[in-house]
Length: 166
Image (cartoon, rainbow, N blue to C red):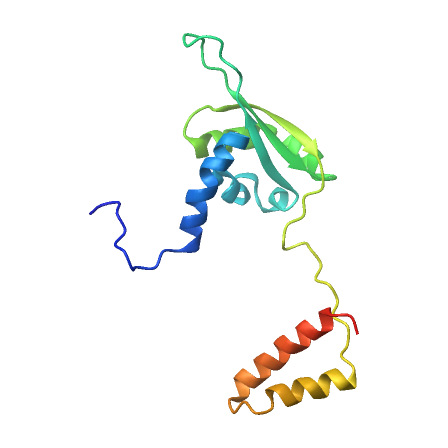
């Protein structure tokens, strides 16, 4: 039974997503999803928010007997983080190689492009509701007896209505 999941048991969505995305990422970018997920630990919190690994470019081998050559890790980076990343290139190469378990990376190529993480994205400002929308919302959720549920649904409704144009 090792390795098999019995039918009917719940499976975390992250496991399913990893099983689907890992082969695609390996084929298109030459790396696994584990490297992308562990990027903050590898690059450190200061650089992880402003950079991300794009792909690993493996050198072509003409014959099977050709010696192994390390690959190039392409990192997308924005602004001044590119300068910081350039100064820490040796350390990042060592950390990525330690993560992968062998000397896979020999160089880093930095590509400057915008990299926004979810933490840095500003939330759109919600517009205030007018009186008609407020009264309609309070009538809709007014019959709910549980105070916590009513308050949650009222906040949800206010968020949805504030995103619509008046």
